Image 1 (cartoon, rainbow, N blue to C red):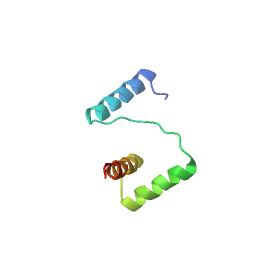
Image 2: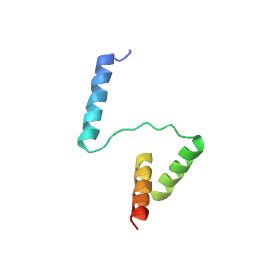
Image 3: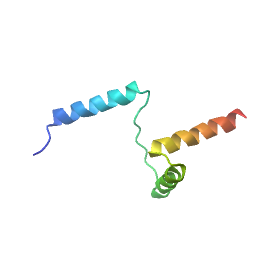
Length: 68
């Protein structure tokens, strides 16, 4: 049975509202396979749950270096 497009759209809107309420946004990046593999490697090594956490840590480190 194919899902109703209105039902799917409602679920997507609800998901986006939840992440917005958490002060976050979903962003789509187009990256090389090599870059994604490196992000996944960092995720594993750092014990993080997702790729977004890796990117957040990298940006935080960059901000700290720039402030020095």
